[in-house]
Image 1 (cartoon, rainbow, N blue to C red):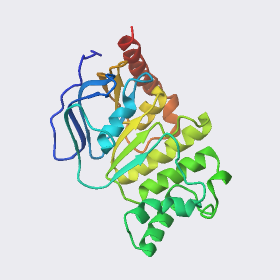
Image 2 (cartoon, helix red, strand yellow):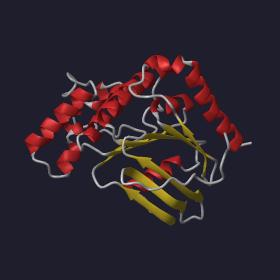
Image 3 (cartoon, helix red, strand yellow):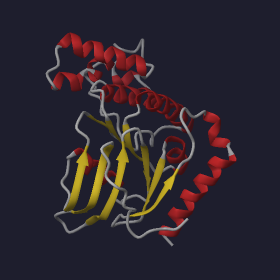
Image 4 (cartoon, rainbow, N blue to C red):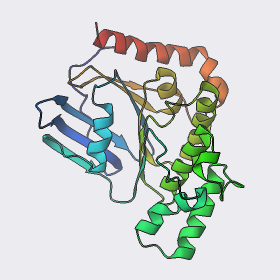
Length: 257
């Protein structure tokens, strides 16, 4: 595998979900978070990003969502709805699960009956039936993240941004939610950009893994993951899985040597 100093240029296609073209980010205090990066996430593609803390992974998502502006370059997001799942579940403690899941539809002015129906469908999709009237304090960490995912699903997003959503969970819960997210992806085939510190999680979920250098972040490797969907949990113990994870790990080590 050959490492590159800048992101590999991929032709922009009509099916692109997210496209970064020569994008850099410099903050007002002079901190350069990103060197120019170029990559594309097509519709139906799940791209994971790994790299050290502070390398600009989360900045990529903030740029894609429009929460912050690029210093140089251009970012295109497919027309349609955008879903964003944060590191923290960000549930409002005074709202029940149902009312939290209804929030985005409510903010968009969706009629109450329609919002309630969308919330019910999303709650069922993430396996929280029976917990609709519970408050966040009564939920486990994994259940809170399910509620956060359900809230994003109510907008039927065509592009999903995930900012280390499972990083604070125990390993068993994390693997279970990985399995559930993959089932959802296999069913809906949105474009996904997923930030994680876990090489195993990145390989298990994605069609491609982007490896970033330390700050200022740049993409130093773009590694294809050859496994089809759906993926069984047992894939994690397959020698072919170990080889891909080893390739990603080697790229991380070489980038910081």
